[in-house]
Amino acid sequence: MRALPCQEISAVRFPCCSGGFLRRIPVWNMSKEMKGQYEPVAEIGVGAYGTVYKARDLQSGKFVALKNVRVQTNENGLPLSTVREVALLKRLEHFDHPNIVKLMDVCASARTDRETKVTLVFEHVDQDLKTYLSKVPPPGLPLETIKDLMKQFLSGLEFLHLNCIVHRDLKPENILVTSGGQVKLADFGLARIYSCQMALTPVVVTLWYRAPEVLLQSTYATPVDVWSAGCIFAEMFKRKPLFCGNSEADQLCKIFDIIGLPSEEEWPVDVTLPRSAFSPRTQQPVDKFVPEIDAMGADLLLAMLTFSPQKRISASDALLHPFFADDPQACSKQEHFTHICTATDEVK
Image (tube, rainbow, N blue to C red; front, side, top):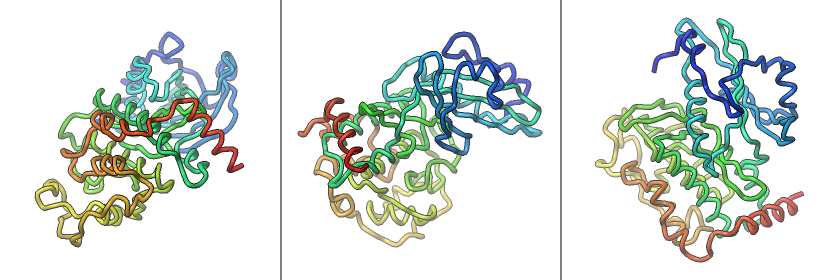
């Protein structure tokens, strides 16, 4: 992918949610105009793409998340990563999906020869799934709550995939959970429009949630997200990560310890690491590594953690799995809200 020359980025105009086009505001120094709109409250995260702040919208009184992105330019021009993310978020905005975090506004500061500064204004959600799971007291989440969380999670994922979007960095920190029990997928910094058979950037997705094809640096598409979702599904039962490798090779070993070593026919042909590098092993019973899961949940988990991307279940088909039809049914939002409050109160 080529870098976008500075003169081209300056000509790109993104319509902003509040009307008009991308507003060029010196957000980094908190200009009078920005101070008149948003009041910073606290820094809530730092990632590869920039810093995230919690702020208050002075007009509505609601909290928002300000994602400040600094992009360094070089002799090749401005990288497309920021343009890609904003264009993607603007595309999603039109659908207003309940399980996708909303982009409220886009603000850009003045560009210099060395740096472009952009602030993305998102709706704010106080906790992510990692925080939520850390608050759950023993013996863990009720089955109906897990069903509700997973159903919403897969619904958001299905929406992305139907729009040919691969998230590529799914992990508990990127899944937001409101106090009312609504799940929202967030942080599309690594997402991109995909085309089948396209070789995508290999260094994506937190190690513990990477699909085998990513670890092997093979070509990949939407099934990588389903693998990550399967890891997160197991984590909802265990309340700790399923595969905790310390390197790509170690991660693959831990995966094969559970799902077994794939056959020679299943091993991708476009990778440098041979199957013979791993010792033979057989698939383990699901209840051995996720003892809390029920039979239908185990069946769905194995379908999501299938080695071959072509054989791995899709998000759409996962939503139709009998796991979601069997009793107990997914809990209502009020039941979910009550459970969250109870869990939080018990750990205070």
